[in-house]
Length: 345
Image 1: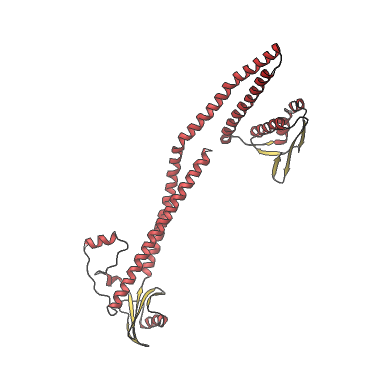
Image 2 (image 1 turned 90 degrees about the vertical axis):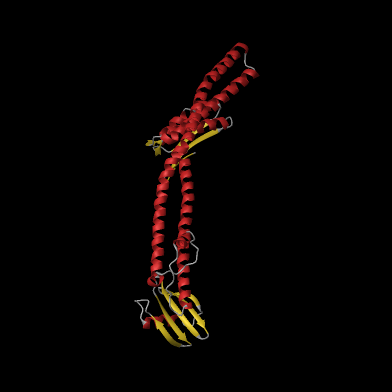
């Protein structure tokens, strides 16, 4: 029972922590993608507004850079290094005629490729878009069109790298947390285990202590009947002591059964023999009540399990059957095998 409770506790905590890790990883990567997109949009906008050229920019102060670190949603600002780390090309058109192609700031695109990319987006609505490995801004003003293409494959690699690193760190962290939670759960459940053990011990001790006075009371009732004859009072005493004996025995057996669940020894045994031998002990008791005990047991059925627990189960079933079956009734004990399953009725 404690093992199941521990596993359930670990599963709940790991589910909660795993959910938080997923949310954290997705949030961090979503913010990174948002920052990259804001950066590219701002650069494209500046180039388009500056007649297709990226300005030299300025060198922000240390405080400005510190503010940017702690404000992931802040506006991207062009610095002195931005023109040297930005790869872009520009295509300008007047109506349907290309008036200017600028590929000085990119090495992998010549005028022909630039014209091909311009033809791909010509006729589309002005605004931001993506074509191959380029983010572009298409603007039109009084018949003059400008297309600014910005290479963003490096940004995609950075995003993929960040996602891989964050996912790997999250998985490793979850495994470390699993080990910590497993260790702490054993510590946390230790008082519960001790409490359950004390409860079991109390029930066992109380059961043994109650057997003696119940036996004495029952014997005294029989002596009174021998001396003064049977009456309603002695009969009531005997009935109640008998009932108490059954309750105490069941309580002790239940405690032992719960303890045996964790330490039971399993083996391959002849369950047919075990059922017949155990149930046969109840034949005389059944005859006293005028009941018929009929066996329908398939011989030599092998079963892998705990033989003592099976015998105890048969004993409890037979005891209840005799107790709750009418006088002159029939009790049938059936054991058979169907496929790979064994059935006891």
